[in-house]
Length: 110
Image (cartoon, rainbow, N blue to C red):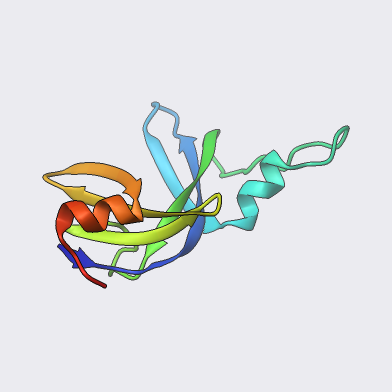
């Protein structure tokens, strides 16, 4: 397996065009919080794309790969809620394990 580095998070807005096809727009992470963490009583900052309807937004991890994605045969270490995790794709299956368990199962030494 090949180690890649987690380099941050980004926001993905999903829009629908006039025939229902999804159109993705990658934005800085702060965009997500402008939508979902608006103070009580204030309007949410819903993304707008001309000719499209906003469907949803989500946050995803970015890696130091050419396209910023994690690929088959690659792994990265992240900290989620104070816990060291290993994220990896093997045989097209995404897995999220505690880092120590991953290192033992893959017999890796770092």
